[in-house]
Amino acid sequence: MPALPGYYTATEASHALGYKDTSYISAMCRNGEIPAYKVGTIWLIPAIWVEEKQKETPKGQGNRGIARK
Image (cartoon, rainbow, N blue to C red; front, top):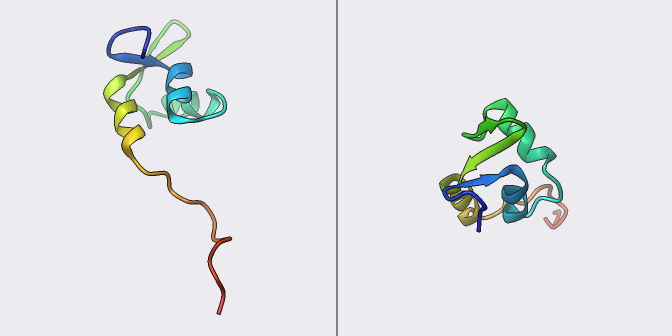
């Protein structure tokens, strides 16, 4: 549950999405990849965006589990 109704901070969003720290989320906010607002030193991310990302299935990285012919 976010502290501010309708918005998550970068820390809250990173915990909700399963990231270890906030650096990735903050970098995405700075680059404009996340529709976020900066208030002072805190990024505010809309709760709708975080909830949509929680519904997505994670994409598997790499091909270690693929059997070779």
